[in-house]
Image (tube, one colour):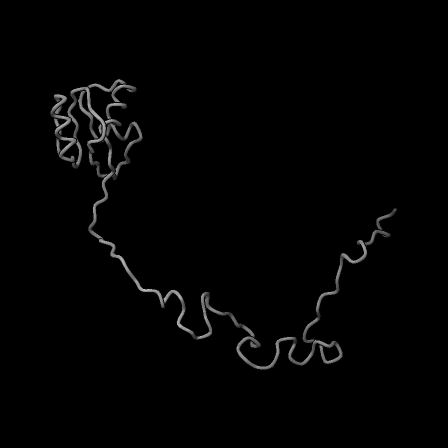
Amino acid sequence: MKLNSIQPATGSTHNSKRIGRGQGSGKGGTSTKGHKGQKSRSGYSQKIGFEGGQMPLQRRLPKFGFNNVNRKEFRGINLDTIQNLIDTKDIKGDITKEVLMENGLVTKNDLVKIMGRGELKSSVSISADKFTKSAEELISKAGGKAITL
């Protein structure tokens, strides 16, 4: 076997369709595009979702909902998460946003809301943007303080 005698396997190659090369090619005239119409012209492209002039689906369906631009999103942290943090990381003193950031519970721009799931055994003062009523009661019952920022 030599490099000049190598050929592709039989049937693996095909002649490309030579369009618009005269009547003798069998693909002349309209170049396999039919007669007239938008699709036969050069530069044709159809919008995504175009339904031939029928009202498209995205315009037939009703709009709904409302996005309030002034809405404040709070990152909720439960008391059992805080108690787990105190137990595992041996945190003493106040629990502030900085302490929660160091432990990966919130990011710099988050607003923090303390929720009342679980129970708090240690008396710590927690400072956050918002508290639920049940969380405030459980914190004061454990001997701590809920400081709203």
